[in-house]
Image 1 (cartoon, rainbow, N blue to C red):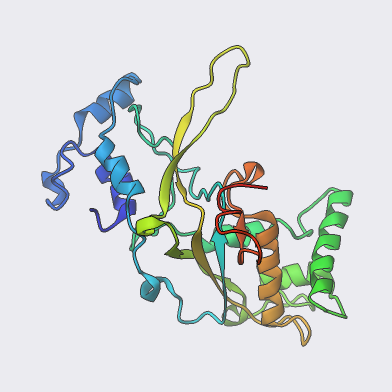
Image 2 (spheres, rainbow, N blue to C red):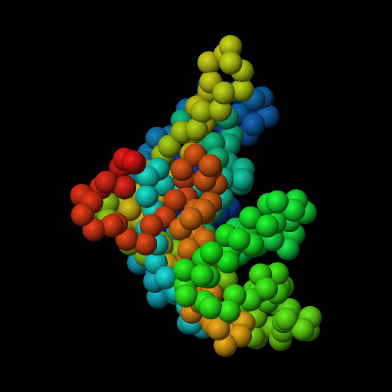
Amino acid sequence: MSENLGYLFYKQYYWKDNKTKNQPLPEIEIDIRSLQSIMSGRKDCKMNSEINEELINAKLPDYDHLLSCKVHNQSFELTTIYPGLLIGSGYIHEAGFENEFKIGFHFDYTTGIPVIPGSSIKGMLRSVFPLKENRTEIKKSKVEYLESILSKLQIDCIPNIEDLERNIFDGIDKNGKRIPVYQRDIFFEAFPIKSKKEKEIFLAEDYITPHKDPLKNPKPIKLLKILPDVKFRFQFRLNEFNKIITADVKEELFKKIILDLGLGAKTNVGYGALIERIPRGLPRGYLIEGRD
């Protein structure tokens, strides 16, 4: 089994002889079928199914000691639920083979395990804030949403939301001055730390089926996803906005937004949903298997 799944997915996936993984790169022969397929647009070449099986049967490795950031001061753990999590779907991964994964996926370059980039987490969180919103009604609803979260956190004196946004995402204090880099909030990548699946597998194949023409049969698109019941650790280095909006309050705010909106691609159809814990009284698998 490849020690680096990202390398397997993007490099070894199209090697002519998949048994030559340990050879130096110059001696590895790229599968000529890949080039022919790309150039001619052929769709009749079949992918080696062993590569796909290696990906979806991979055990979640323990890289906590490598990916756990030593300078973070805030962290929390959330677990994926049905149907799972998609990350890196905007990357290209298709050569025209039958049975290949046709959509990209994001892996940590060094360890090869799927991670949610800190920039993606930061971007999703900022999308909830109002500063860049031009539509008055939506801007108002965003402010109300954030104020409601802070109220539930028992914050009596709720700050100006736009000032808070500048502080968190732009590194600008309430007086309009630049905050020193070492005092700004930092968003680190989130990474999987535990899978409750049998044999600790954490990846699976799935399909999306776009219906481009109502009079033609749709063509399913094969993709790789994170399974339900996989726990992720989120890490931040946060600073207080004022004596009331502390680093702990920011952490709880971020957690609530992620729980409400999810992360990754296709959140509009259920992907990327996360929970902190399964509510008491529900049978194991109730949320995991997609029941209402």
